[in-house]
Length: 134
Length: 388
Ligand SMILES: [Zn+2]
Image (cartoon, rainbow over all chains, first blue to last red; front, side):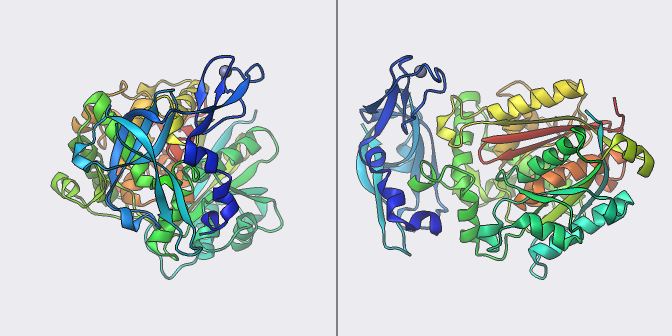
C-alpha cells in the first residue's frame, strides 16, 4: 500500500522506533512520546528538549489480535497493548515472549528491538520496539 | 443565525450492492432526498458530501464533483468532507453551518461509501487510516484491536462484561430486524454473539459492525424555505463537533471519548435540553463497546454504568431512551461516509412518526452521535419536531 512503500517514510522515524527518543517540556516537566515540538499545556512558554525514554513501563490495556492486518499474518495471534512508560507517555506495541493468557493489566514490561512487519510489495522489513515481561 | 430544518431524506438500502457503483448509490440517495423534500433540483444551492476512503476503495478522488455530477446538480458548489467514520456527520454540520450562517437557504448533505469493490483486507487497511498510521497501525493495530483495548480497559475499570457488550449486539440486531434498509434484518441471540469467532479479544465478530455499501442524503433548509415547502420540518436545535488525539494511547483515559463528552454537552446546551430529555439517540456503535462508551459520554448514564444499563434493557426500543432504533452501525451496516447521514435520517423518520415497526412512541427529541476513528472526532446533533 502507498503509505508503507517509501523507505524515507519509515527511515525518518528510526530514532523514535529504534531508541524510544521522545521529548520533554522543561517548563512543566511533561514527557512526550512520540516527541512533540510543542507542549500542548505550556504552548509558547514551553521549552522542549530531546529525551530518551528508559523503555520500562506497565501494561495499561491489551488485546489478542486474531484477525491481523496485511503484513502481520506471521504474527497471529499476537498481543497488542497500550503500554504506559515510567516517564508517563503511553504507546501502542506488541507484547512478546509471553503467552496471551499470562498478560494482565499492570504487568511490568521492558522495551526490546524487533522486526515489526514485512511489506510484501516493496520488500521493506520494518523494525521497531516491542515489549516483553520485565 | 438562521434556524435550520431538515426537509427531505433519502437513502439506499445498506448492504452489499455488487450491481451498483459509488455513483449509482449517491444518485439514488440524492434523488430520493430531493423528491422527499418536494423541491426541484434547481432550488439547491450547495452540496456537502461525506466519504472516508473513496481513493482507496474505488480509486476515485474529487468526490465533490462526482456527487454534484451524479445528482445532476451542476454547476452549484460541491465539496467533499472527510473525517473518517464521522465524515457524514461532519458533512451534515457543514451544510447546517452554511445555512445557519446565512450563505444559503437550501443545501444537500450526503454521505456514501462503496466498500465491496475491494477485498475485505484492503477495506480493513483503508479503515485503519482512521487510526494513527505511524504510531498505532505500524505496530500492528487494527481497528477492532483499538476498540478491544478500550473494551479491556472498560472491563478493568468498571467491571463491564463481555455479555453486557453482547447485549448491545442483540438489541441492535433486533432493531435492525425492523428496519427495511438495514444490512442485517434478523435477530441474533446472546449465545450467538458470545460464540462468534474472536477478532481481537474481548471483541468477537458479532461485536463488530460489518463492511457495507450505501449512501444517504438529506435536504436542509432555512426557516423561511422550510415553512414554505414543508409540512413537517425537523428542526436542528444543536450542532457541535470536537477533536481529540488521533492515537488512542495519547489520551488520559481510554474509556472516555472526550470528544463525545464535549460535543454532546455543547449540542445539548445549544438545544436547551438535558440528556434525560432525549427520546431517541442514534449513537456510533462501530463496536458494541462503543455504544457503551457513548451512552456514558453523552450523559445517559453515569460513567461505568453503561454495560449494566444495556443489560437491564434501559436503551431498548421504547424504553427511557431508545438507543439506535435503526439498528445502529451494528445491524444497518457501516458504509463509513454514509453512516452519519443515515443517523440523521433515522432521527427525521422517528420524529415524523414514519419509522414503521420500529417507531418510538411519542418521540419528540432526537440526538445523533457520529465518531471518527477511536474518538479523534465526534459530531453531535439534536433534532426536534418543534423549533424553539
Ligand atoms: Zn509544558
